[in-house]
Length: 586
Figure 1 (cartoon, rainbow, N blue to C red):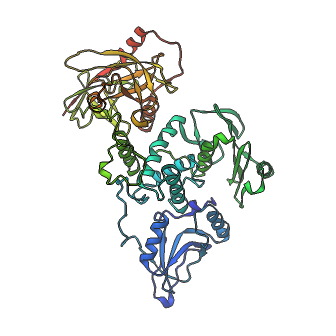
Figure 2 (figure 1 turned 90 degrees about the vertical axis):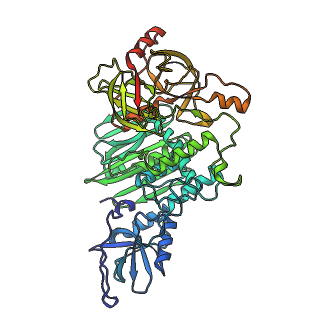
Figure 3 (figure 1 turned 180 degrees about the horizontal axis):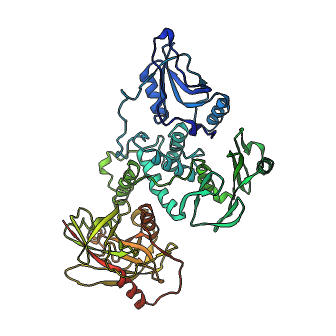
């Protein structure tokens, strides 16, 4: 049985018994007790405490013989309750006066949610106080992961938004955006930036063979250096960061923990947990940090040991928080949920820098400068009756294009053949369509590396369809690694872009995809604002995000590890085989 407090919280309601006060007695089961986090004299006060403390996911309320309302956070074993509660208090997940009750003084369970007040913050109101209630557990887990990566959270990635999580977001909002209390915009900004970090590193949960554990790693940057029996070792390719995981004897586990403890410069820099089924030790010195966690699983000890220099604190924080005995859970939440919709709203506001709609200039929030410099890029309008470009990504007839190319289409056609919409992402402005059985040429491969600044690129597109009838090839370079106002979804390209280009591939000198053409700057609006005409300022969705979009939707693609550079004609021939006209009918 896992000893983690979050693992013992019940996923279903506790069964309360109703009776008269004289004979009242709620039973939580043999050998069990309920963790009591607080008591309040009225139900409304109990409800308010639950929401303010962020315990709405797991809280249950019981009416007591003394007339008060006890707030419980789950059941634990009586024999283990003391160590579990003490550990949770140390981690900030429980108040300091929490205790365990067998339920003898409780009369009945109260359905506190029935009369609950509505959330104080609209899910899509960025500038309201942060409200975790509309978020799913996966979205809360993603925020916890982002806070761990940025150094503000040291708890488990359990998706339970308690006091520790709220305190961490508050610290983040204050340090990063000068907000004394967190806003929905703070959470949206964290999600918007963290999704790029996750994609850049290829972060995903990795199961540890034969250990019954998993850990999140930046898979693009970690190399498996050794595997012997049940022991595996990984090394970061760019930083001094190491992971070792294995199955060990109790004596060896004790030696490992003693080593980590001795590694500390001072004793107060050591954190220890010593339970019957879990040992944790972490320490710091001037050379970096070390952490080891050991779990007693299936009659033996499984351990994960991590060490790194001070420059690896973001990676260490996320890795440590991600260690789990519950299998692998994807880091990315649904992009259709509240969190990612808020992230897209914030991105739109940053790109357009339109502050008028938020009231006076004294409004506290994520910094958005007045709109005096380049306006938002012009994505082509939804293509009802229009055309765009798509390119083949696998042998099953799947093409990648922009979401706005196929938005609101009653019929999508590729080279005159009907296509099916498989997946679409408004956040990344990407869509996958398929033409089963069609002969669409040789699929393009994606580059295994991100393109660098000033790298040469070639784009393929069907521009101004109706005026320019065929495929057009253009060349340019990557002129900036970010889009407008620091947008990290796109990069800037100098290759010319016209209407109809949307969805076309941008490939490197090896002929491998590094981006998806998406938009051009509104040169007319720039001229109105600056008196000058901006030329060749165009944008493409980063190839890494395109791969993440395909992977998250179960769509296969292939990656190339470089190879020999190709001449312009060879690249053009490859693009001609894989790039196709996409027509949308309204």
